[in-house]
Image 1 (spheres, rainbow, N blue to C red):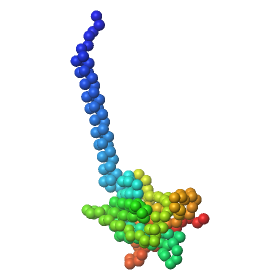
Image 2: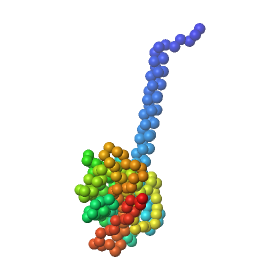
Image 3: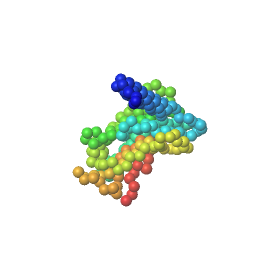
Image 4: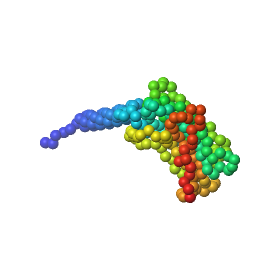
Amino acid sequence: MRPRISPITVVGVLVIAGLSFGWWRSFRQHQQRIARQELLIKEWLEPIDVKDATQVYYRKLPPRYVGCNQWRIYLPPGRRYLLCAAYFDPLAPSPEPRAGLLEQVLMEAGQSLLEVEWRRDVELKPQLFLSMLPPGGEQTLKYKAIFPEQFSLRFAQCEPSTVTYLGGDTATVSAPAERLDLTLVRMRVSSENTPPPENSPDACGLLVWIATYEGMEGKTPPIPRVIAPPAG
């Protein structure tokens, strides 16, 4: 005689299997959320492990969205530092300046959290915002760069060429230098509705960097030559 299985038993087994699978999936999702939260806490809140206080340490954090990047950075004592932003436009007609300082903010030695956000508005003009949480600070300092109108108009007529950011996902250590570039944006000339050729020269752009402040009290920091477009 073949054993008979009642419909109630079958339904009970299916219910138990469904509940078990649902619990397992919920448990897995919970574990994944905990892992993501722990990773975020480590990346965003955990300070850099500084093993040599005379060196520079930095770690690029995961981008919040396109154009917005953050860094944890340690600057050694014994020097003064400036967070600087500048624009450059080698094709600007005379007597317009071909480069100009947009912002300079005094930084303290120690560990800071920096944010650089750049984007284009509805008219494709540049927008640049700097934010900094200084060592031991309880309030984030925020700054908005003001671009010259003629530069903004030319910027709106260009297309992005290259955008580079400092560092990677892991902590990096380097010897102190006179300049540490955070964000470099190069644009190239583009005619209306026509994409620029890949080999076209860069026309304009912007740079955000950290500069040493030694002997520069009351002076304007020089704009790095590196932001000039390549020859040819």
